[in-house]
Image: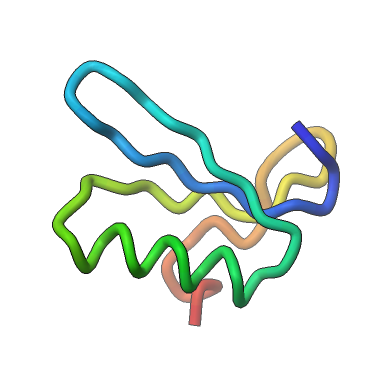
Length: 61
């Protein structure tokens, strides 16, 4: 995983797809678009090299 990138998971059947974007607004836009079409998604947040930051719902706003 790349430090300083925003991550979210998209679940499709038995498959988990992890998607990353460098820009928070871009990541949120893609996350929202997957949610809008009914995909099961999980926001992970910003990877700092050891753990995810900004991973709660309040941080997405």
